[in-house]
Length: 277
Image 1 (cartoon, rainbow, N blue to C red):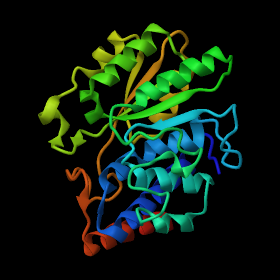
Image 2 (cartoon, one colour; image 1 turned 30 degrees about the vertical axis):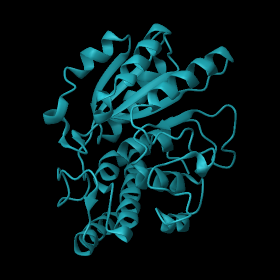
Image 3 (cartoon, helix red, strand yellow; image 1 turned 180 degrees about the vertical axis):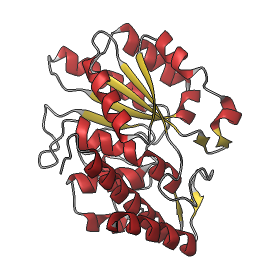
Image 4 (cartoon, rainbow, N blue to C red; image 1 turned 120 degrees about the vertical axis):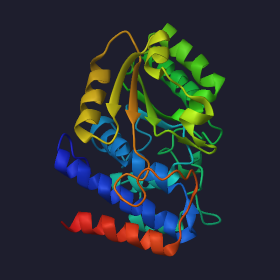
């Protein structure tokens, strides 16, 4: 389903995605729950409003391409794909089990709904730049969206890809930086601060917007502005709050969070209550 422009319905979808994330990670007791909760609004705006997709025909040549460079954020990705109609929600129960294509790091074993395998961080933007350049050469109006984590900005390959995108004026490319200030070593600002991030990205020829990545209206407006910008690739710096939507998890640094049953149950109860209200 899509919820074009309907803020209330989009926010409800984001809550459902958060519930799926918590339930999926709870089955194993550890996983990437904090990133998933934080980026649920971003994924909702992109997959349910902005991107041109056809779940019934995932190989549709005219589709937009969505590339998840932070490929470990799979609980959220699979929840999103399921709610969008690529497969049934019952399949989410196989998450990270041996033999399941719903692996801890998203791969093309999932089929066309995963555009690229990006388990090695820092590679997704390069793939996106190549896709955008190819689509433009083919004369297609499809767009390419790349979701990048702020920790990935420490990879030199990211900046090489930015140089190419800006130099080629790929205005069919939109880079979304999920700026949650968390990476495996802890607080990203303390490990290696990317600031002044907006100025740096603008220096590579991007049209940059800085927004609250948990504000659905701001997300929709930013995607619309990026789509309407000509002659430059777009970049949305979306500042998200890890653990968003579950008060006792918000702001809690935990890259791969250990998730005791009692903590998971409390989170599930909170989210179910929100959906029931």
